[in-house]
Length: 342
Image (tube, rainbow, N blue to C red; front, side):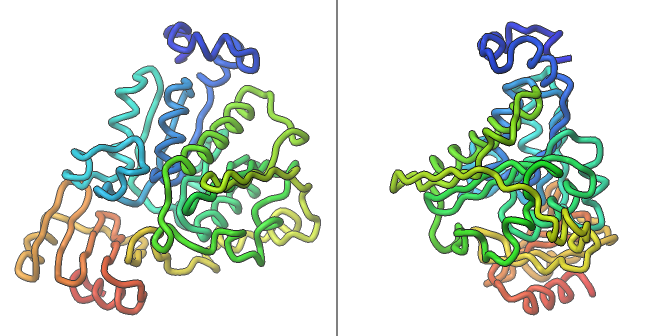
């Protein structure tokens, strides 16, 4: 266990009464998964690795770009130059930060077909995503399997977070269904984002995670927290109880997990659309040779990028693609069919 390999590494944390030596040993046995390793996810992963959690899995579908570095604290310019998948870059960094814990970066998009498999066996799920569709899916898995997860979102200088503990607190559907983003209708692409807001939300998420893992969490003290760091305006509300008429936790209808309600996803902070091709594998080397006649191609072991101005196609071995230069799913699908195949 990480704790047995040297409590001195965590000595200041062990001195904290809320954790202590017993809590540190609980952390060393814990298994956490972070969905999305952008701004929130990278801050969460950094803090949890340093705290000495036992196993940390990071699932992310995206790659590092220079514009990420302003708010995504795990990455640097070399990662952007190499166009590394965020999950790969995060795994490398976290293993250097704390070699005593287990870290696994998974380059994948969390979708209905793989969600239960990728999230199986973990004590806690942390939300580092940038879209509500994935959060509905996380909520389905969490409620179905009785697994707590911690929601968080940031845009501009505003952030919101709350823990969702099935059977104890209201689930995501209870609180959010019918609300168009709960105050987060804007996106990073339209109003930007500042890193103090990111770090504030991530810190609250990690604090809730530590409390849950060491057994000191209570629904009575947990809060649904919202804040605008630029305006210095903050609110905190007690968490409601589950609703008996809730489609998800009351009636146990998991429509996102069934795949019936999963739309095309437009990525936050980028003029692009993601294409899902479940069950399709791409040979990136062969594809790169074929596409070289159509535009500028650059690839590494994890992804291939094709520039055909004004569009940029980023292709992954699992068949996914991020089509830059459009927010129209029909245009994105047409480009995918033209250069990859239908």
